Amino acid sequence: MVYYLLRRVLFIIPVLFGLTLLTFTISHLVPGDPVMLVAGPQATKEEIAALAAEFGVDQPLPTQYVRYMAGLLRGDLGRSIMTRRQVADDLRLFFPATLELVLAAVSIAVLLGVPLGIFSAVARDRAPDNLIRIFSLGSISTPRFFLALLLQIVFGIILGILPLGGRFPTLQTPPPTVTGFLTLDAALARDWGALVTALRHLTLPAFALSLSMLATIIRMMRASVLEVLQQDYVLTARALGLPQPLILFKYVLKNAFISTLTVIGLYFGWLLGGSVLVETVFDWPGIGLYATNSIIALDFQPIMGVTLLIGIMFVVTNLIVDLLYGLFDPRIRYT
Image 1 (tube, rainbow, N blue to C red):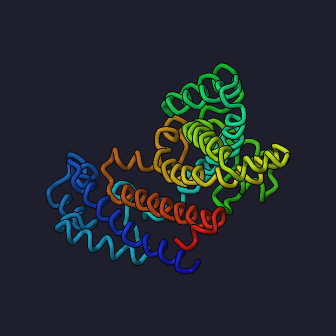
Image 2 (cartoon, rainbow, N blue to C red):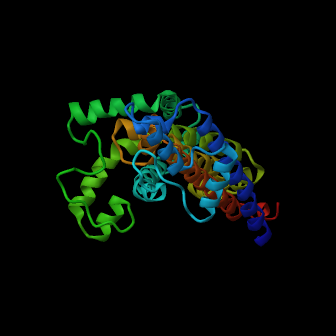
Image 3 (cartoon, rainbow, N blue to C red):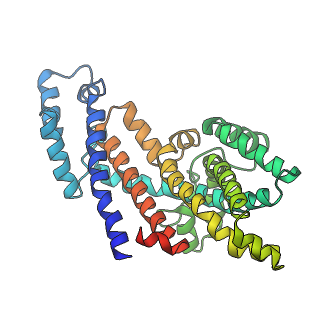
């Protein structure tokens, strides 16, 4: 088990190195000059040169990359050219909002997708199965930004029961920051009014973000359960007269969930990087909106910082999924 874990941890190092090299190269090959954009049209050549020297963009790209990597080893992600703030400080500010949104979306997808997938497989080719399959097909085909706008129109404007956007009302005082998760901070502070408010703001963007993952989990779970139901040990359990719920939850679910676990791990990373549209529509102050503003301003350091953070979360999530494989199937620990 130790060798299994060590091998996967060592695999992270070249992945992250390749990610930094790729991100740095692409971001610096994009047409445009962020220094000129920040300096403004009235800036003199001396002012532009001084600003370029301040941020080190006047040096050759290999030299800039070496300085960037040296900073990473010290935990320094660089400074934003636009705001002059440390990128690490901005990520500490914005990342908890995105992580809270993604965790809420994943929770919705898993808690609804797994039982719906099992139920769809058990009711194969009957009316409930057909309805669930139509729902999953429609969900995975609907663009996130369109769904987000539709939810705003229905629940925010027509029904008026949920807020249109934002993470917390501007005129209300949020709970003291402990974890950066508003819902958890409100619960820790025993501020139940703030907890309800935070959950109301979280509901629409989390559901909009979760729908494609929910549809995928339903389809994967249905296919896996149908496959496991045909295995000899399941047919034997049925022949012995074991109750259907016992067969499903003791013998079928554990073996059918392994392939779905892969989808959950992959989607977690995808949602971190794919929350841009949902955060923009709902004005959610996370790293997606932060990255969007940085891209518009050609601000390289925040773009690379966001990409690196998402990459780290992605590989760590997949490492956790690998370890969970070993829990569901002990044979995998030694492969």
